[in-house]
Figure 1 (cartoon, rainbow, N blue to C red):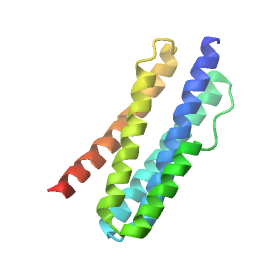
Figure 2: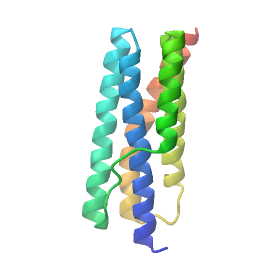
Figure 3: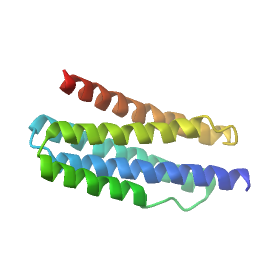
Figure 4: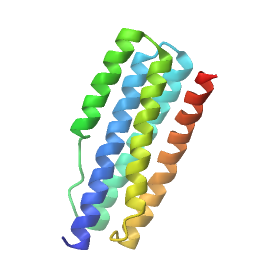
Length: 150
């Protein structure tokens, strides 16, 4: 696989999980009854869509490739589970736990890309910029989850 193909595959994989995250936040915003959480999750969904758009732009601009336009099958399955769990329990704590679990996944995917020695320097720079947003979202949801456990 050429470096360009590897860079393209990596960025498209990150686009997919970032879209999963955006859709998960949209679902969480719909499922929660807490107005603060609705706003918080809604803002995170918008932010993740912005990160996705930036990654898609770079795939086109830098790599001349076709960016991913949809999330993963696993992400869709997780959202179905999260929606079912929210419907059954009606619990904001359950929603926050599901969101935080999804945040662990996306953070791990970005960290895997950051540790990839085969990525070109320009693509690594793109991943680092996107990761800053992902890490901030992860940390916020982690802190929210821990606050609710007290």
